[in-house]
Image (tube, rainbow, N blue to C red; front, side, top):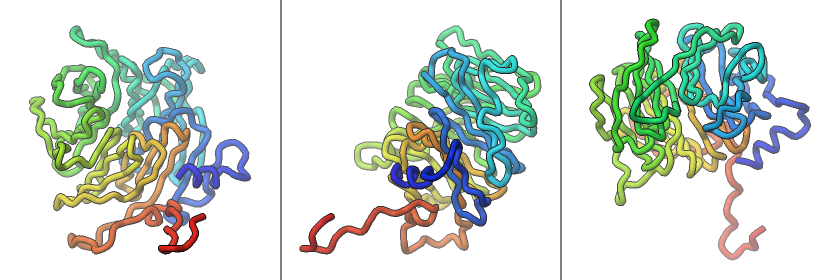
Length: 327
């Protein structure tokens, strides 16, 4: 995959983007990012935003930035929102959520809100916890007035009521094992969290009860360090495994599929349910990709596994025949 990114960049000056929309081209790559963490869109699927930490993830250096793309994947502004410019404070932006025309960004101990049309700051919600040092990791919107924020280091999930901006602690539980990514199921409204430390997937009830959805123990270990989670319009779940470089899909009938692998540190992914696209940042490759997802024709299991070619990635070269010289 790294070699493929180099292939895309050759011959391009500055930020290199494919000129055609995802539906026609199949895949768009964004480069020249700086430790990109999250890649999101809203319900309309007309704007896309990528957060770049641009430095140490826990340092208040005020140099983080957010990139904006239009609905076709064309770059509008590499540093659409930039810490230290135009009165903006933005240290290490991580997870994001777009609510109507407001972009909410997890930035250390503060949930910052920006106007998605012009990038101007509109609110700062400071999260205070008397029992833990707050470092917000991800943000998820439930579609009806609530934001959820995870703190991977402190094993906490906070609930923010909009528009009152009231912050309450939903759950503090070591069993969360580093809740890195959050998502709300588009049909059931259930809050889902994925674990960085133990690669587990949890459901959290409205009262803060934690239930493990998929075991990841000694005999059933699939995941390593999970970073992102989201759902497509049919309720299939997608998770990114940062360490193993894989994106998994869990279908409604509990089937597990690796839909892409050999990826360079896939981060906090999200699904554009309007246009049926997957959005994946690559933290250490300083790049991000948007790509088309297949629509399920029926609920029957497929006889063949999906490959990288299904998502626009170049597959590895074939293995040499037995007895043939290797290159």
